[in-house]
Image: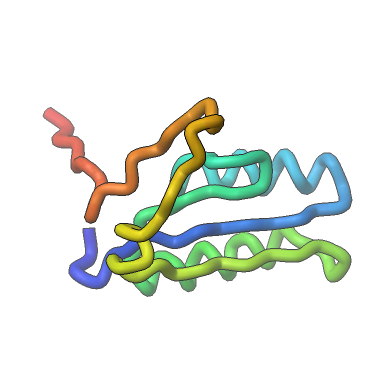
Length: 100
């Protein structure tokens, strides 16, 4: 992982169901779905720029996309309501996996 990696919220509103599914599948390779149109991704700045470019290639002018970088202070301040079915953990950095 890059030294400048941090959490990003990726939110979108896509008018066409086919494009919606294509973007959601693409984002599943980058992060974790929090809501229907909201993902969290642990990215370095160059990865975030690459993701933005890849998504703009899949979107049309009528669609909306926002990628929000979160500082560590913002992540610490996140509050998740008790009624939330999934209560995602927001560690300072996600666990890494070692491929053997």
